[in-house]
Length: 399
Ligand SMILES: Cc1cc2nc3c(=O)[nH]c(=O)nc-3n(C[C@H](O)[C@H](O)[C@H](O)COP(=O)(O)O)c2cc1C
Image 1 (cartoon, rainbow, N blue to C red):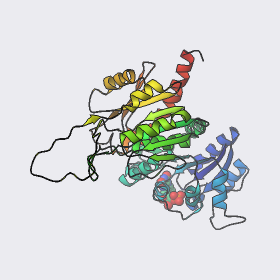
Image 2 (image 1 turned 180 degrees about the horizontal axis):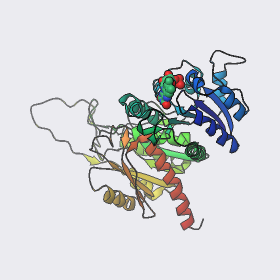
Image 3 (image 1 turned 90 degrees about the horizontal axis):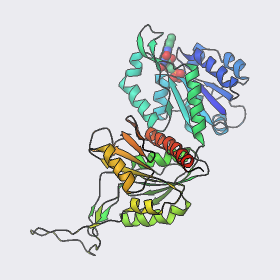
Image 4 (image 1 turned 45 degrees about the horizontal axis):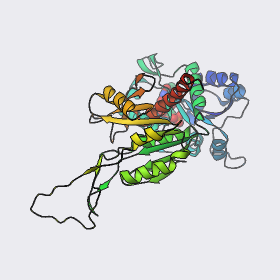
């Protein structure tokens, strides 16, 4: 792989030399970019000798074209080790005042960040918030180790071992294109069911989980068709978004696109009831009580379960209790291959939250709990399990 190794100005910068050596040993091409502060700790010559390439440090020492852009375009993975608290803050906020931070903004591939700092800096609310921002962007954070730190304190903050960072790079490299050639159909968000031309019933789904899944699938090389109810989220990069409003429209677009799909993930919170005959005019306010007769909406997941053919079908079950039992019941009754049981009605998970805590009920009989994590990380774990499940089902069918 063509890897950019960004080195920031922390005491652990010397360990980046070992990391560069290990990556060269694994036959990667390594381009080192150092911050000004990093040069105070290790001389660029060390990295130049290890990688056989000129180390990039100065944004304005332009020799040819605009180098930070061309370097960003020519490489497949950006690894920042060590990442200082300062650099993490700059990345989180999009500052671009040196070669590394400007290159980061121009880089569109996967990013892996290995922080290293004093324990108090690591635990500071500002650093926590900045790291959460990077996680939400889908960057992999290689957590620091705990132990004796150069500042004399003990606790988390020590740069992960270069071997562990190389391992994380290997996982990222493997994951990178493992959905290439596949089409993933994802539904997301709520639906809105009109009561009259100005009113509707809906639910609290934000669409964040479905959008995180779409982003993850696209990053892993899939063609992604995202059928989305009304949400306030930007279209993920490289994803075909089909906007719908009602359950009936969502059903229509799902089945229009089903032929193209290899994997179908139904993360949308589709309304269960609607008014099948919507009045043409606004219902007038009166002092009298009114009642609405609601009909069930089409059960898209059940229909997908009947028509899925060889496709892998993943449903979602948003529950406030009996998560495991309900997920498994839905798996069977809707003929899914996996159901993601989603805890809603608690703070910091489910609807509207940036985090999610889910369990995966699989057709193989396994139930896998995933720890509470940012939705983008949960999305990657779901795809890891989808791919593993498909292999297991193929093996069981003798394919
Ligand atoms: C001796 C020394 C060691 C330092 N070690 C660290 C460190 O391990 N982690 C960190 O976040 N900052 C550390 N700093 C502070 C950074 O060098 C400082 O925030 C600098 O602005 C980082 O610049 P950069 O992010 O552009 O590389 C250290 C500073 C000194 C003087």
